Amino acid sequence: MVRSAALVAVWLAACNSVSPSTGIDLANGGDLGLDAALPGDDADPLVGAMPQNARFVGNAGVNVFRSYSNAGASFFWPGFATTCSTQRTGSCIETMCTNSVDGGQSSAASAGTITIVSAAPIVALTYASGKYSSFVGMPSPWHGGDSLTISAAGDTVPSFSTTLLAPGPIVLRSPVVQHSVNTDTVTATRGEDLALSWTSGIAGYIVFSYGSSTALAPNAPSFSCSFPARDGTGVIPAAVVDNMSRVSGSYVGDFALESERHLLVGDALVDVVVNAEIDDSQGVELGLVTLQFQ
Image (cartoon, rainbow, N blue to C red; front, side, top):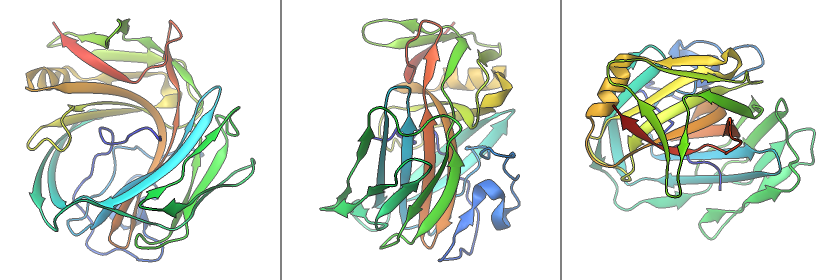
């Protein structure tokens, strides 16, 4: 399965009209006046759009790991409408969303055959019986720095196409992740910045997300902080750390390294993403973590 973007994507209400044929590539600014992508890189993955009339949502993407890669896709009508408010602090966004039932039960949708074109042989994902086929390559056909064009032929979800530069694997140097049998833990101090450092990456962004582990939890704030992988350092401001420490319920954090584009095509919001591996200094691959506040 492609790494879930549920905690990572931040949808900002915007955009009244969308070209049904080409959509708006938010990474390149489009008509929304957003910052253009860095040369050879991806725009900030926290910059996105969730039009109030978007009927379908979904993602198509690739995981590029050291020993293997995989690819998959999923599109669906969620059965509810979402209204979100956001607040940015430094490189972080806090999002509060409310959901209202609109259209009944969630249902799967097709965007037609999806192809992944690169220097490696073309990979095709086909749709049948309500789901897409998946792909696993061992050894990996893709590597950090490769250019991948991910396209959909179009169906209920209209056609789309975009090109991303695959990030290369990095090592997180700080904060220190404590490993146990059941969970990985990061400690943050209230009233203090949480500093991050890592080996400089090829492309994409490091994203740390913190959100409710309950699916579609109503009125539950979520947090996402993004930093260019090439920078090697980043800071989660003390004010954001404090807000994270005040949430109630079951929350989980997630480290991701990704190049991502948010596309609006017809009445669909599509996330196209290429993920790469993040290890800690002990050589352990990172993903979900528990935040412990002191």
